[in-house]
Image 1 (tube, rainbow, N blue to C red):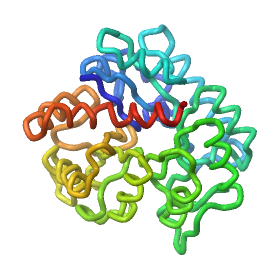
Image 2: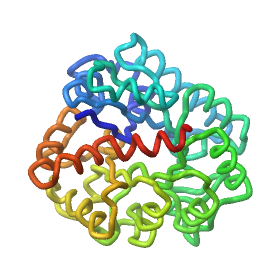
Image 3: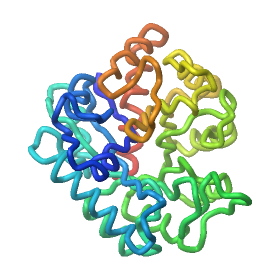
Image 4: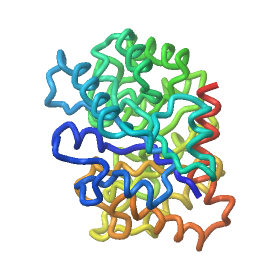
Length: 314
């Protein structure tokens, strides 16, 4: 079974440490070529995340630097190809193909510096998904850590409309709740939460309430259950069985066709005990197959994401 993973931060690590080699087995990356190959990753999303320490006037430039790393050090030799379209998704998910795919996503609109021109440029460079915020306020909206958080700004609403026009996937992970509901109301395309879990199971502010999860399901969207230990449980040792409690909760109100995974590998300093890097994804697959039907597992590993990408890309 080929896998789609909706979120990782390998590009940030590679920008911060130029010695990291994506094609070396001993690379200090959770996501690298050998791990992707071992786990049959069909498509990995690579986030462009701008650290808060980067001055506002340099954030677009920082995103361009990350994109340069993507093309020069990740998709450099044809073993992993950039994914831009439905045709590319079909190619990398074909069971007979040895190719793997990589897709650029924008984690927070900070890099845009309030400019739709910057969005259009990033789209031409390969960005195919947009998260409005990280945890803090930017020109588009408020993140989950803002006190008295509001919804989408005027620019945020323009950004949503332009992203819909460009057929860019909209991502509500990290977005404050008022902004979440603005996106639900205004988007013409199904939305995703690329790396978020269920508040009902573990009440972390980055997780989503049942009302939000049900809204994503009604919207034909997908929730990417994430491997961040402190989004799963407060336990010191967090395992796949703990993650499955979130999956079962989504199943309890009709989420079968709306579940995927978004690991957040390379964006976390602490990992689950039995799922520590992309190369161990097969442990998750094996566990899923022991508890659920194969047709369900196929949906969660790739088919639900694939359906959403097809609907959005047109």
